[in-house]
Length: 374
Image (cartoon, rainbow, N blue to C red; front, top):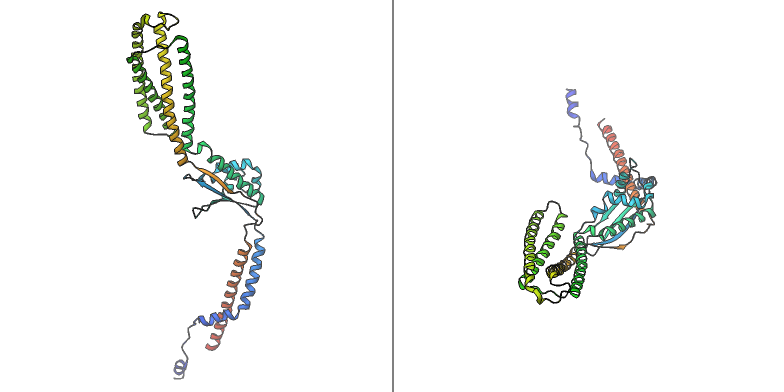
């Protein structure tokens, strides 16, 4: 009976509960310990930050206008290799696993970042982060010089390439027109003006028009061939072949009309200095010179209109580039940020202090509980 009474008289075991209010009070009451740990950890973190290499960030503000993305060009390995060729001393600041030019270029590309503008009035920013402040500024400015030369080159924009191609063709045929006019004028001054009948004159004009159309199609074909697998290329080639066949037929008819019409002139043409026997040859030569002048005139008119359209298109689609602020050597390192290290160290110290308080408080609670149970 005594054993049963002892069992019944014992209190049931109490569960260990965490009182948050008491725990918070314990943490606040040990605020001196928390502050001590925070200060010590923050100071240690600052000392640790000196073990890291100082990095300096040079920044260039630039303004690209147009739809062409420059980020691909800036972050490409080819551009980085061009920068390394211009500034070979940058290699001493890079640490690739294998010292090859491609690996150096990849390392340099990782040091580059582009900040896009969040507002339409804000410029873009190129940032280079290296361990040497002066070299970081030089690399950033070299990148911008490469971008400027690339954007301003005709190879960058299709509109600029078309304008340049049409301008070259226009200059060539303008010179051809001048030569053809000089040759026709010299012929007329030497032999006199040979009048053609209406049918021959119409044929001459038709041949000139077809040759102008043929030249236009050939120019379009050259422009289309710059774009691979263009379905219009075959169509333009067939049109050119058909125009050449028509032109050959008209030239044959034209020569027949001129030779046949030469007998109708007879003795009525007195302006030929070399006699009537030379009339057919002179008529054909005069016709050829007139055809060359007409062809050059129509070609120049067509190219002039095409050149005007190309220049308008270039203004609409072209890309302009302007450097707002060039990079200068930064005075202070951008990494490591010692204030951030100090804050993280202080937070870590506070966390360690809290863990210590919790451990000490929990140990005391367990000890007290064991004493009460005994």
